[in-house]
Structures are given as C-alpha cells and as structure tokens.
Length: 395
Ligand code: PLP
Image 1: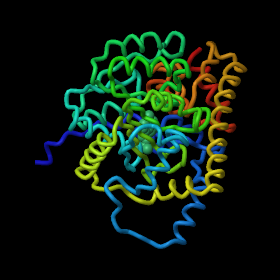
Image 2: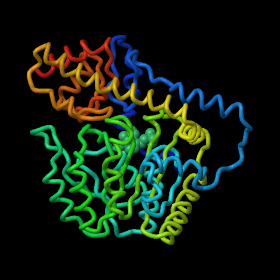
Image 3: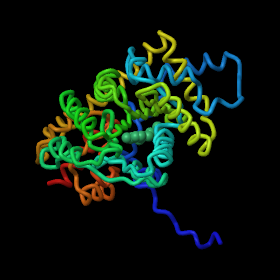
Image 4: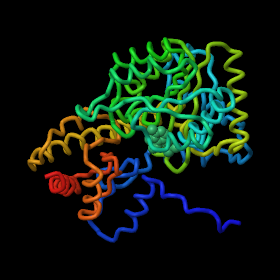
C-alpha cells in the first residue's frame, strides 16, 4: 500500500537550506531561512536563556504532564508582554502555551474549524507561505487581501481597506502583528487605527500573528496594532512565537492569547481550545515555556533579555542601512532606500525569480524565490560579496 505514496514537494524555504547545506562552495551565503544570525553568522543562545536554564536545572525536576493549555503562570506573563501592563483590561482572557507559533496557529485553525465552520480566514497577499498550509491542513478556507504595492514598495493601504470593507461579517482576518513576513512592511499607528475601525465595522474576528515582537522597533512599539485592537475592546486572537525574540527556535515555544467580551465566553473558548489541543498533541512541551516564564518573572533576567533583544534588533536595522549604502556605493541601478523603512528580519528586495536563481547558481547566495532576503543573514564579512553579486545580476 505504501508504495502508492507520492513524493511531497520540498518545503519552499526549508528545502533551500537543505540545498545550501549540500552546496560545497565555501563562500556560500544563506539569506533564505528566518533565523537570526549574529555578526559572525552564528545563531546565538541568549545569555538570559542560559541563566534561566541554570536556575531551572538547580530547581526540582518534574517530568509529569503539564495541564492541556500549559503552565497557567506562563499564559499570564505572556498576556502582560502582549497586551501590556494593563493586560487585565484587555477583556476576559483565554490562553494556551503552544509548541511554537506554528503550533498556536494550528490550534487556532482547529478551533475555528470546529466552532466557525462557515468562516473564511483572510490572509495578506503575500504572506508567510506556511499560513495557507496550516489553515488548509485544518480544512479552514482561506482567501487573500491586497497588502503590498510593488510599484512603491510600500503598503497597499487603500486597496487593503477596500478589501476589508467587502469581507463578509463573521469571517476572520489574519494580520501580522509586526515585522510582516515576507515584505517587512507594517501599517503605521494611524493606519492600524483605521484597520481596527474597519474590522470592527465589518464584524470580522481579528487574528494577529505576532511572531517577531521586539524585532521591529521595540517590545511595546511593535505591539501597537495588538494594543489598538485591545483598546477597541472587541474579540481578538493573538498568536505569539518566542522562536525569534528569545532565540528558542528548537524548543518550540509560543502562545495563544484570546480576548473575549464576557467571562462565560472566555471559559467556553478556553474549553474549546483545550479540546483542540487534546486531540492534537495533548499538552505542550515544558522546557521552552519554563525558560520564557523564568526570564519574564525575574527583573534582572528580564533586563538582560531586553538588552539582548535590542542588540539583535539594532544589528538587523544596522545591516539594512549597510545594505542600502553598499548597493549605492557600488552604483547598483535602482533606489533601494525602501529597505531601511522595512522592519524585522525580512526585506522584499524586488529581485526577480531569474535573478534569485542566478544568485544561487553563479554566486552561492541563497534567497527565497519571491526575492525575500533575511537581512539578519548579512554580516560585515559577506555584505560586499552579496551587493556585488546583486549588482551583477540586476545590471
Ligand atoms: N508566523 C510567522 C509570520 C512566521 O514568520 C513564523 C516563523 O517563521 C511563525 C509564525 C512560526 O514560528 P515558530 O517557529 O515559532 O513556529
């Protein structure tokens, strides 16, 4: 029977890393996968994480199951991080600690499928390629709304608003909380206000994927959209990932935070979230969430973490500037200044599929086919080679 199984296509992004690892050229550069790298091209384990692990290792060991929605204390610290110090005014909250942001998205998708089977989830065009896959796996229908204006390399705001105004009431709109993946383009504070008003007016359920809090402009600054929704007081689903901002990629740590209008609604939503989790992975892995909770509860550790997060953010924003400066200095045709206005790890470079292919084949520089560059993969040691190669393929 199993010989009838077809080979699945390689994951578009992770597949590129497999190809990168197999590439024997020593000068190769990987700007494809969404992992932070320091100025030496290494993905560091944060000092705050090491300290938290030491504290946990010195404490009592407990390998019994966690509750279905994870450690209750964890959901509380996460809600404070997401909604701010006044998080208790965000409404009546349900929450779960999930295996990464992807685990949270899948639990939310299962929850939507079970409770709102008629609802369509609207995704930005473009979006993280795993979004459509996760919703399809949970049999949740998706459609797209315009997001990116290729002509101006900016947010297609008017088209986006016009699309929201036509979405059927009861549908779900998925927005990137900050550091939009793949474009790096976020709404301004004023645009968030208009989005929140339009979403409320249409009777849509807002769902914010918040995978990069702290990677754009700061922990609170990046929560501008989430908090605008919180202040408006309607229902809200937020899915956090701590893969990037705590560097806990392989520990698989994330969270769902759901604001509801009444206590009864929050209790019912929590029960349905728990049901989705129970049928999926039963209860979450403990270690990553214990690290996050330890750091967020300890003032010194939290300060250390915030400094480490700022350093990652500053390095990325610094490399954005260096990328633009270096392209300009080499006389590469085109205006690349838009790259410094983008936020987070990614930049939509405007490189075509053909140019991306040439970069890989001729220069061992790996970029996703859409032209999305992981700016955090640039280092002082490789930036000149990268901009020289870009110059060669675009000229
Ligand atoms: N959402 C977006 C927009 C992402 O870019 C990512 C990771 O790349 C995730 C969610 C999921 O992150 P995690 O690795 O925690 O599952």
